[in-house]
Figure 1 (tube, helix red, strand yellow):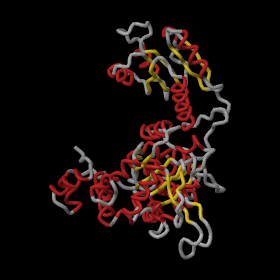
Figure 2 (cartoon, rainbow, N blue to C red):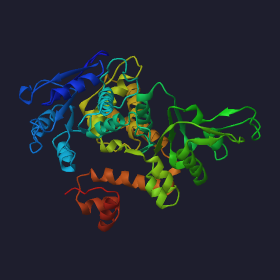
Figure 3 (cartoon, one colour):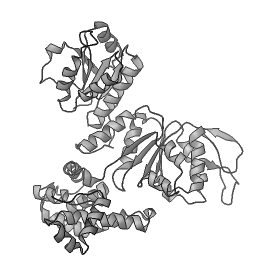
Figure 4 (tube, rainbow, N blue to C red):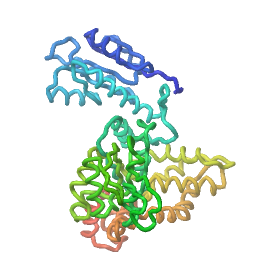
Length: 447
């Protein structure tokens, strides 16, 4: 769709005053279409629909639910229920009928505008550019239900000020999500730092800055990351690498927005939204007393867990197409069906980052314009081991790395067409050990 594409909003409500109110709140790039529930054309598409639950005004009748069920079957339609009946069972029934959001009546112009902004952001993430708010080159690729859930989360973060925590294995795309969350405030600063790269001694200086002469080597005043991010977003990657003492200092800043530069007695205030990312489950680190529980709760104002690539393999085809299209090589390559099947059958320990490097290797090394399964096998042997090594995070510790590797081995073994006894013999472990390991790694044996 072009940059000047209009978004179409369907409104179904028996009260013309409600329709007029909505019309007054609409931005210029939205077109409102008011319809009676009996005037709907199943082939007509709308980007969003606002549907009254009680179309006759009788609170004992919920005719709007049938309309919502029909509209929600349209691909990617965003259905919003409206009602002055705020009983929990009514609102939950609206969600079951296909609504993704609920607006309370009487309508609030601010709430309506916010919901429309979130829907617009969601469509932008799906590749639809509207007016002058089109997204930049950063995008989330994939059409799996997991990917659509990630886009919905990103859209819902528009105008939210609470800290955001992004969990996921290394290489799943946590920084991409952080950048997309920030895009709704693109005119404001976005400052990113990998916490694991900060030395113990320089943490405070990097985060809060320092004044000249505060320590040996401080020959100039330094502006810290939080000050540079004032009014915008500060992305802290690998937050689990923070020492306990530095966790306490970050917590104090999050609670008040106040800080002091190293060597200064002057207190400063900044307004910054923190977006933190972690390769590990913070709850597990808290239980091991390696992460502060109060900081975990403070960071988890909004939380997203990005599933690994092995759990959203429906995205692999589109990811490959994107990576191959972006390669600046003389002979363009396309992915054969057999090659795609081979890629989808792999466990991807390095996730999307590893897939990208494999695609880069294939675009350079595959001898034909079409990439074959044998090319994939060769790249996974030569390029795959290197990619997998590059994404090893030593901060996980040896035990966790061994557990991750064991899980990968068992996943590959389960792909073999063997019964339990044969599989246990293949792995040189007992039948009971196999059952235990499968259970420990939350996997399933073939029946």
